[in-house]
Amino acid sequence: MKTPAHHLAPNDLRQCLRITFGGVLGYLVSQLMGWNYGVFYTVFPMFLLGMIPILNGSVVRQFLSNACLNVIEVSLVVGLMQHMPIVMTAVVFAIFTFRFSLMAKGSLFLFGANGVLTLSIMFHFASYPDLDMFDLLTNNTLASFLAVAIAFVMHAVFPDVAPRTPPQPTIKSKALIRHQTLIGSVTATVSFVVFQSLDLRDSLSAQMATILILFALGYTGARISARKRAIGTLLGCNFALLMQLLLSTQSQHLALVVVAYTLGLLLFAREHVIEGAGSGVGFGGMTTMGILFGQYLKPNDDLVLDALYRFSSMSVALLSTLVVMAVVHHMLNWFPAVSSDG
Image 1 (tube, rainbow, N blue to C red):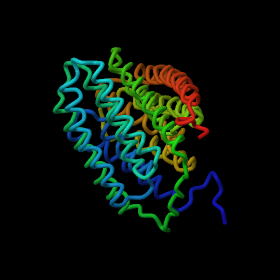
Image 2: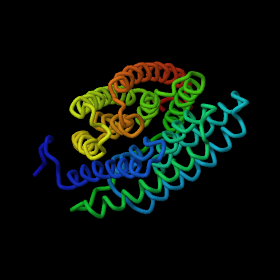
Image 3: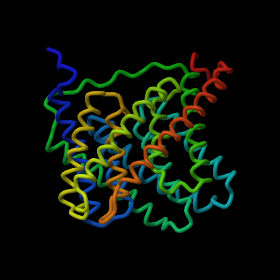
Image 4: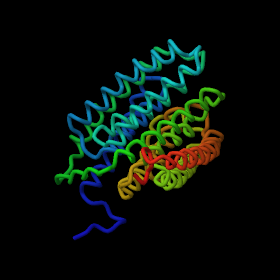
């Protein structure tokens, strides 16, 4: 019998619980240890447990090898080329092209997607001269290994009750693979240039939005993803504001914050699993909460201005990204070798 759309199948319920408590555990560890870059510790477990419903050797190798390669890439690109912006941009474009080619081909999608998202965040942070590069790279690597450890714990505590059907590989023409690779790498590079050029230190949610919709690997899919991402971000911001009102001046009490955070993640994880469509409304709400709670909620601070700014900046970023993608999409379709119709 088919499970109703508003009900969770047994495997889906367990994935929902894995995402929720995995995200909470990452947040809790980072807060108790006082580590910087809380966004890594909140978003990485969500990404690993939400995007991939299984955990095996291939998933772990892709996730951890990407984290190690990120350290080398960021160190070389920022350390050696920051004073040569044109050369730096060309190298970043090559890196993004490599990652998107893996995503378009499908077999190493996790390696490519996690690489694009993580590199975009780290390049953005590294563009500020007062940043401690060693601290950034250390936290990124530590958060990656912690996310894998959390994923193993969550799969042990909430295991699937039935084998999952592996997704069928999509047959693509070489022209379509080139099209998806170029539209992703060009758009991601434009995002990189914008966030390198402007003082957008507090626009992490907007930057992540410009990258996450690229996971759809095409302009048509990105339009649908952008709408869902906007809805998810709006809901995530509103939930964070509601929790802020309920907490009032008690945000310094970690236990109360964790309860609020758990409730929000549970609601959005459920929506994410029901959607079953990558970066949709549920995933947008989860990552928005992860950014707000992990990166911006501090004792005696509030989320009101942060939440309002997150949504407004994200809306502008999504609209701008879609404009860039539309232009690149139509230009690539002029050439049969890189046409999406090929």
